[in-house]
Length: 428
Ligand SMILES: NC(=O)N[C@@H](CC(=O)O)C(=O)O
Ligand SMILES: [Zn+2]
Ligand SMILES: [Zn+2]
Image 1 (cartoon, rainbow, N blue to C red):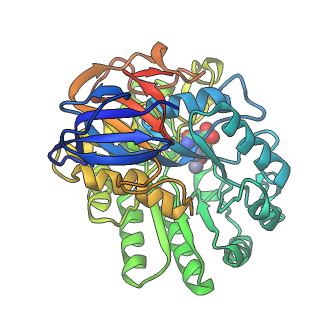
Image 2: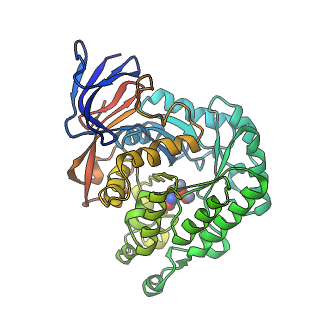
Image 3: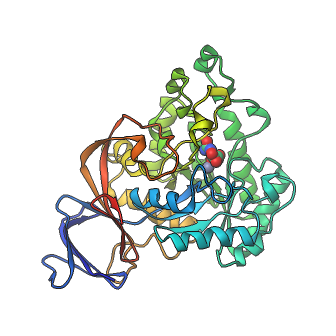
């Protein structure tokens, strides 16, 4: 394996220094490192961050290889600066057995672009009726610690309570897609004055908040770990803040699109903006940003949700929910959190690497860039701007809501255990 000396890089926004990557680890840090025998990467103006960790990625394999595969999804992840992703369980077959999670884990290893940590389903087939083999998935080679019926809510309170109780044995966490099903039947977009005007069935904030509140209470009652997926409303942020102030074991994530985009975009009737949970109001984006800044929201997660064009290029009501996210996440966090002064680069490392690794109980990622640490490193140029082209994505799908939009920043290089998966902005 090659040795790399990265020259003049700013670690988490600090003073420029050199960083040596050798035998898969960070071998030295300091100004004027000897580059003899090493590949030199000129990194003036670049920020080094620990490899990003995504708690919420849809890789679609097995079953929807027309939308994404483990290979193409992890290539998109590497281009976005990720070295680890959690692969959601709503595949076909559903990842509800040790066999399926081991298959996804192995495909990730074989592809080699990004470590894949499969999420196990909470209930068999995501049907909400019987608990899946949580223990067998935890004990498998995939070592599952995060369980979710994402795409569907574990809406039955008894089922949710049992799941929370069960995962305590192996320090697992239930990641809840908080959506009260009766309050969201046929729902298409955020409920408000605009949904009325557009004639699209409304999706009220309370449908999310009712489940978040219930699950915080259940997690406290059982003494177990709850993680709230894709928090989208100001009310949910406040409920999580209150739960944390009581010392309850609750964590939460927000998605880049909910930090930046609002329900006004539904007025285009372009299903590229159709997502679950829906885009909300400006007041909600502001509450999410404030929650991410003060730590109420622990992590940014992409909810990268690829869909082939036949599932998106149709009328709004018929289109699938979901949007791409891996390749644009860091740029959107820069735009909404860093360039606004709400987070510095150390804060970005916490929200996009350390915290998601901690929540997912992933020991191999989310470590500070220090001598001896595994060389999972992103080099990022915050000074450039780029116009997003859907056709340039490594994903098999094209459903990015940012096509044609100018965003700040660019991932220049990603190293996974010392091997570059991306160099000069290109897949290796
Ligand atoms: N976010 C979405 O709009 N869609 C996700 C499911 C989900 O995350 O709930 C998908 O699997 O397509
Ligand atoms: Zn979801
Ligand atoms: Zn999802």
